[in-house]
Length: 559
Image (cartoon, rainbow, N blue to C red; front, side, top):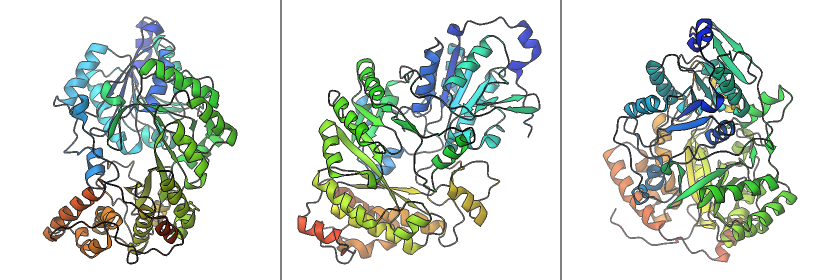
């Protein structure tokens, strides 16, 4: 494949006249294409910044979170007022407001003032186009300024990512060492054509180098000084905490078909490496202690795909080491990794909230299509146990999956409804299925004609959008309606259930009823339900249906 893009900064003439630049004077500007008011530190950039700063390289970050693209609504607002998966937050109370400035004017000023030597863009597939809009703008300002893109998307779809004209190089693996090497070479006016883990445009061809993987034990710590105050804030069930993200591992040992992690594992096996690796617990505790001293966080966000995919020895070491730190924290894990003893002990040292992947309500569909062989009876036990421990959790569900029917979506709703009654502290995150490149379901969608494989990447970033594939059993309106009504079916008592179906329609009647019922859900969730142990036992035995569930609350409203 040829790109037609010439890397001006590598031309022989320029290299002949360029004076070598001290690496300590080198500057890197990262552009990060966040969604509107979606705050939270991007750990990948922090890791890269740590590696660069360890070599004395100056780093800045341009994060787009304060700027609104095309009428976006903040994701936290949608999830708190429509999905009811979290509580609303007030950024203004923390002095953080949307920016009214022109985003490109601000970016141009930063490029002019900072005078970077290299632009880095880290982006997921869904915002790669948004990030490319920024790099194209920078190329117009400084055509000779080299640009490198990295992240999961360039790693799993390098042939697509390298086609972006404003990108000169892509990182096809982990990038800490590669980026440092690139800076050192460019500072000396030398070519990057042989840098391991990087694809480089050179004239009309692309130099494709082997992937690169890092030793987690020897990497410098991530650096967070390059992020502004707003980026530190992460919404967490009605709170805005000053949060530091922490990785305990990279990769995941599981094989979920909707996720790209198995593809990453496969890609690195090609170079005889395992992508799933864990840090030592001693290193993690030391890292956390450093962050407490240096950044004064209020909260830790443990970003590992499955936090409890650790041994009993590692778990004990975490409990013992974290006891002296004591800050609240969030984890994500799978239901089969949870026990009452682990939850109680995690709560003792600071567990605040957790996310659990359920993904679908039908056991057979979940096992065969999603590669998640979890029994519903286990989920019943886990929710009852969490309720006993006074622990809340976000449960992740996906709507609009390939081969899904209305009846199958209703199975997810039915299961969510039962789990909520087993533990009124839980909240359901409903995600529309997205065919991300690298996932097994992406390949299936292309093979079955559900998705056009010529589409280079997913560009839909609106969290209110649900239907992306050409679904054989559900129309776009069906998926939109079921997704909107999902929280109503889950949280509303029986006497309201017959009023919900009309909210699935894009009609004046549907809008009016949605407004009324959505307001009721908001009030219901202000105070958790009380539930008797007898009722818990009944639900766990699988007797509960939407019709059989007892009324938990009475809220009067004129329908």
